[in-house]
Image 1 (cartoon, rainbow, N blue to C red):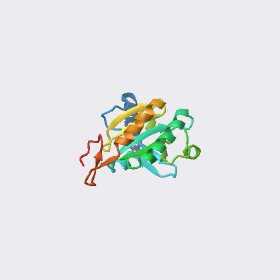
Image 2: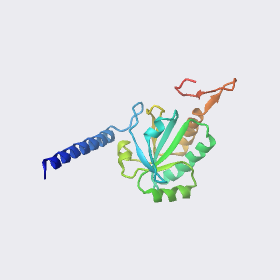
Image 3: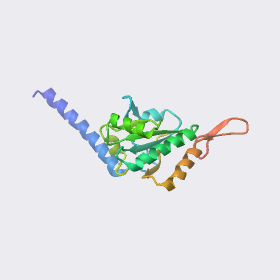
Image 4: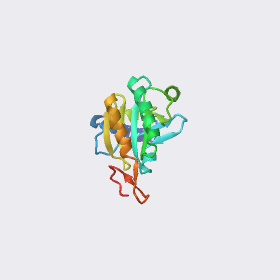
Length: 191
């Protein structure tokens, strides 16, 4: 092997080491409220890519939900969130279902079976699951427009329905008496 080949191999090894270290760090630390959300990249069902950077450009919160087609609780959560998203379509909240444990075709059938319209992306290589330290499903993260984690939840029980409904309601912009739209109730943004 030439010396150039050895140098390239060493550089690749170092880069892979940094990547693995980053993933292990996030998995060990977990995602905490008040801290920056780890980056994620998913593959939408149409084959295009979606990442956290896509949401950092919009002044809206993001509800990132890790789901699996084999998770019965996820099958209840997804239609519930879809209904809330339609009911509160003015809410300054983007909802993304990030699938683990299946490929695009599996999640396409899952989405069709559930008759939901929410965007579904797939964590193809499982890296996002590790970055977010997802060990129980569904795992739900509310991320602020600035990329800060505001809520972390796992599971979904019937008593949680009112909490999510309140979340959507708080993120609907209020209309003032003058007809101007102000920041959502509970928002830290200035009108």
